[in-house]
Length: 257
Ligand code: NAD
Image 1 (cartoon, rainbow, N blue to C red):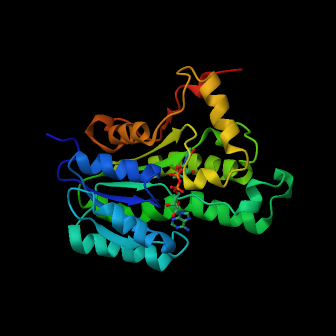
Image 2 (image 1 turned 180 degrees about the horizontal axis):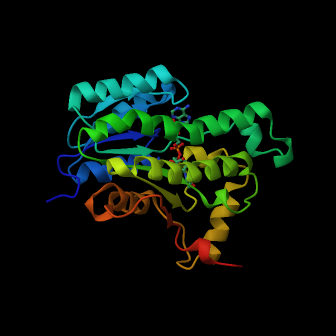
């Protein structure tokens, strides 16, 4: 039997065909899941077009993670349509462009607030909304996407590194909070991949070049590889894993030089 057969999953963070969340949506759908997709305003057309390629037509809903009313509406509609929820993929992140080009010491209060709100707090808000729907199913699995910039300094990653550190800490606190309800919470720390979000980081192609040169596998990773690891965390094979940050980065994080 396919590993996600009969499961319902909410996937937040599809912008276009290069989005990591889109690779996860495709993989989950191929494993039998019924996915629910959300889009942030301007990506509506892209997401609706992409969704036509999925085996079962998904529910597609607008969601700006800064908007509590939209978050509530998403879970209300999932409840109405599906009666419960088995997994959530959180792939939303944002920092204002100037925060990803100026020196870190120049990080503005507003830039910090926005980056942490969209990139870290949103996981907590989604987990809260998902909890009763997952409890109705006897448990569930949430996962988010993070980057090694949470622990090490990468040029221009700046406030996004701080947001990822907060996100990873939130994974651990949520795992502890929701574990008694059989809800697991994990992250995948993906190696650098050329996506829309990555394009906002000054000098991103230098990071790709260094990974190709120094990672144990001598290459970068693809979104499909992140998606395969996501299937493990979302599905029954990962049932004993929670509070974890799984590195899917061609091994780059183990290298000292
Ligand atoms: P992407 O640009 O395709 O996805 C980012 C998504 O965040 C978009 O769908 C965008 O609509 C969404 N988003 C931003 N602000 C939002 C808001 N206010 N409300 C709702 N959605 C919002 O890029 P991606 O690289 O696929 O990014 C997905 C996740 O993977 C992000 O958390 C990113 O930090 C993480 N990640 C990316 C890389 C990489 O190199 N690309 C590496 C590690 C982790």
